[in-house]
Structures are given as C-alpha cells and as structure tokens.
Image (cartoon, rainbow, N blue to C red; front, side, top):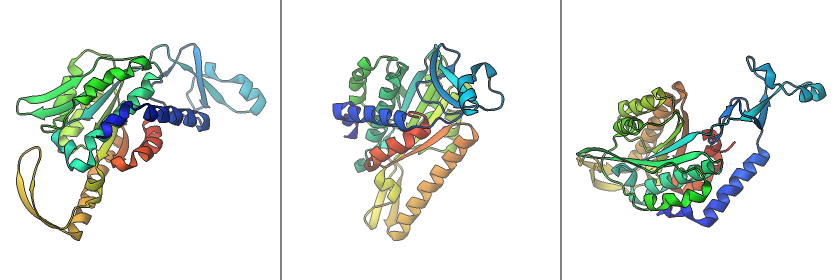
Length: 301
C-alpha cells in the first residue's frame, strides 16, 4: 500500500530536498502564502515581496528603494503559527478501483503536507472521515507541532480502511463542533458525491473562517477509463446498486469525459469561493503531483 511510504526515511529525505530546492529557486510573488506561514506583525523578518497599492508604508524596505529604485515590502513572521488540519476521505469509493490505491495516495500526500508544516513548528493534525448506516464517522489525531513527533501519526494511519458512504458535509459539521481557532484545512477526497454535499461542506469550513485547500484525488485507471472491453455487472461500493454495462472504446472516452466534467465543476466552485484547487490524478504520478501541485497549494513556495 502506498501509505507505508509516508514514513519511509528515504521519502522524508526527498521531501526535505524538495522544500530546500524550492526555497533556493523561488521567486517572491505578492499574495503567495505557504502552509506554515502567516504573514503578520511579528518581529522576525520572513521575506520580501513587491509593493501593492494599500500596503503599509512602514514596512517598505528603504534601503532597496535607495539602491534599486524598487518598492519592496518586508514581511515578518507572525508570532502565532497556524493550526493545520488535513482531512482525508476514507469512504468506500476511495478503495475502488483497488489497484488505483486512492486512499494510499491521499494518505501519503496528507502525511507529506503534515511533515512540511511541522517543519515550521505549526500545529498539525490528521482527520479521516467515512460513513455508515449510523451516520458519519470522523477520527482525528491530536495536534502535533514538532517534527520529532511526526511518527506519532503512523499508528493512526496504519488502521485506516475504505468503508461506508461519503458524507463530506456531515463530516465537516462534526469537525467544526470541536472548539478550535481558525486555521487551514486541506481536504483530500475523490469528491464522488453530489455537488450539493461537497459544496455544503466547503462552505461550512469557509464560514468558520478556515482557509480551505482541496486536493482532488482520482486513480490512474479511473481517470484513463482503462478497463478491459466486455460486459460487466457493476455494484456501487457505497449504495450497493447494481447495473449492467458493456465496456468498450466509447465507454472509455465517456469515463475520461465524465472525470473532466466532475473536476471542472469542483474547480469552478473552488475558484468562485477563494478555495485553492489542486489535482492529484494517479498514484503513479506522486512525484509530479508533489513538485507541481504543492506550490499551487502553498505547501511550498
């Protein structure tokens, strides 16, 4: 299972190299914020960015202005770090197709984000949701801050299994019932529910003043529609509904089109509500996802 890689020393070393490499190569962009960093009125200098209309002139770097005739704002590390919650979907649909290992992909990406956040001494927790006939089931770790405690997540992750239906809105409501200050919530899911459900969930998190980020997890075969041609009897893993289907070239193309339509609708909703949307399409592309989508999420700059 891909999830076991999340705590592999070699994988963690690669994460360290990825973070270090991007810090060396990055260019500063106005408005860009990383997970693990709240720009505020602290006392420790954090970074520089271009001046934008409305910025506080007290933070202008006058030395840079005198030397380069360039308006640059000095930013400072806030005295308070953020609380980061990584919310992972462990419903039955995350286990189908089995070879795609969507849950494993979500876990290793979520753990990587936690590891990077803890490197900045932020308070990080993992939370996992699934559903059953008795209602949503939400499990969460306590917050951990120091990277030395990262391995404390391993026992929690090792017990996770895909089961039940996806009840994202109910899971969000349950998560918000626990008292906590506003922070960052990263949701990793295939979002294979009605748009009404995931839109309700994301709106709840926004209303609670969280900064929300979405990683849309889809499997390699699921995305490509790469199923052998033939007649199938398909059972919905969450509802139990049976359907007879015949699969061929046209159906493969239809699968790809439906995935793109699903992703486009979710992305559009996120864009209109100030939510960062990121694709995690295919466990085979893990390295590419981290190097290209983590900067989009603000995990690394």
